[in-house]
Image 1 (cartoon, rainbow over the protein chains, first blue to last red):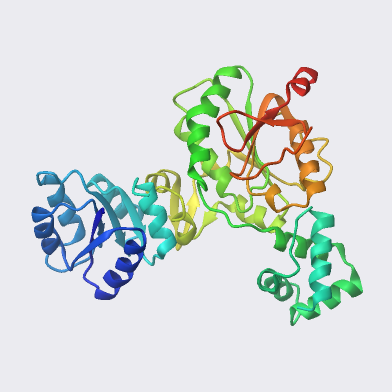
Image 2: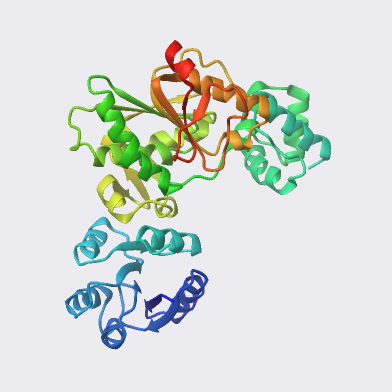
Length: 121
Length: 275
């Protein structure tokens, strides 16, 4: 089963996303910030990361840049899932190595569509 | 809704647009007709129907028929069709029609997501065949849908359904809380209100027609009329792409399926020779 790491400081968002991703057939893990997520990836590299932007300790963009420097860190698909919805922010995420981008609020249909676009259908 | 009102709506839809409406689907009818009643100044759908019976006003009839015809749509809906266009149909057309415009028509374009998706693909491919000149057309039964399509303005929810993020960044600008497709894409498309079972004698010269998720919800005589109209609108060698699972050919119709391409139909050889 493919694994998805949900990285978001909101427990509610992680819970909602977990339900959607489990329905899509993913084995789900959770992290509450970028640092926790990076530690998780160093021990077990997931197939995909659903990533919030604004988080304490280490934000999503810092995590993404760090992940892509790790051995095997180029492999996971990274899908941002954030309230940041300006074109400049989206461009910055893509230039830093994001594969897709979800603008909150989201629902199961949007998540499924974005995962399909990232080749994870 | 009263059973006789539901029956009347079903009859009007069949007669005006060829659409098959199941009068038993009370919820669907009420969902679609509630906004029409409000827009037209009626207190309820019952009042709307009473007004319709009293006045038999053409404008009101069309408001109801158009509301019932509105379908679900999204950017790059059924992505495989767009991949096939990009990888097979567009290169073939660019090669075959070197000195002539390549005319592509989204025959029931709704709020524009399908034809805008095609326009984005054409724009992305522009460098591959600098000499190819694509002309894009969108038509729909619904004036309201066409008005929205022509604005090129979509909500955040709409642009997240089917549109890859790189296409969003490349072809859209954020305007307040909406997303506006670039003027270059918007201006590449010509629009027209068109009833596919109506008089289409002046609709001619197309190389590729997208007519997906339309005929599957039509009564059989209307299906045949649409197939005949679309076939007549094709250039020699032209093709029609129907939705997956929509089979328009039940005998001697003028279109035949193209092997190995789900939903793709071409003129029968005899029609091609006569064209």
